[in-house]
Image (cartoon, rainbow, N blue to C red; front, side):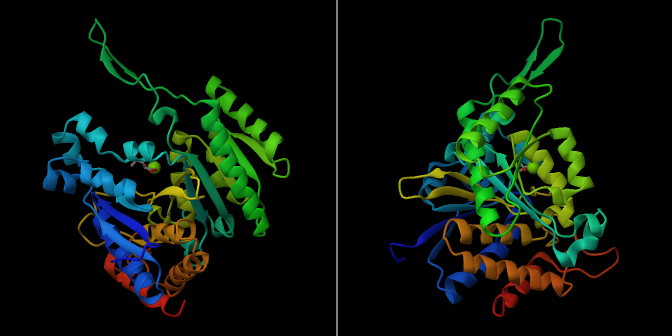
Length: 376
Ligand code: IPM
Ligand code: MG
């Protein structure tokens, strides 16, 4: 029987490479529970096709009950072609990652991008461009074009199809994510980092973008006069991320731009397989945030089931969970150091290995992290 002050973590492995990378998270989390007495209880439910095959539903009530009862959800990956082909759109929506993000109201998606000294040559960018990059995206996650109405595809009288999605934000939605970003910038400044914010939009063509810019500026002026704010157009931001990524500290942007730009930022680290994320709600009366931790890579069906996937994004997402949900900054730092140590030793999964060089399997990489933990 777990103690009352135990944190309940729910693993949802999901589709594709999800089960493989989450298997390594289970090992790492088990290490912290057993060797460091981390007060965690680890539970698991099938998600995606595994749920469909077992329960005939993508979101049975029991799974939803487990999700809402958990202190944090550790998510693997979503996306399967079989799902698209065989399951109705309504059922897919019920069991989708997007529905879960929305229902948990985890509006602030934090995606740190840090260049790792051992991986400079794995990046497609020049080492001198990448060296020292330490930035974090705050991507708005529960509004914008991902959720806006109207949406859908209709057939016009003449047989022509018309597809519609709507980008929509209220000022309240912009305010809360802006506030989150400014608070993060303040915290980073206290840690000796630059601690400034770039807000990214398309104010030059979108009314909602012009409003985004106005609202972010208003929040800054009213509550965060100590934090420097820059505004940047999204297309320019894509270019600047590749040209001179060290200019960024905190980047706050909407759901769609955040999706695109964070993948772009991923190449700074050398692989999408390296990037963790935390999706957080507002604080409740006890100061706690609901949390969903997810690697930013997808289900990668092309390499699924082959033990080729890099588990580090999922493992580093668990480090974010240790820091944010458990408040165990030291344990989080220990885990991040263990990952650094493994990479410094030259160990690489296939996504990071130089052409023709030997590489570790998914489980090999997870084992290497666990053995590095003892001395990290
Ligand atoms: C991400 C992913 C998701 C998104 C997909 C899987 C729906 O690309 O988290 O970046 O677009 O938000
Ligand atoms: Mg994405």
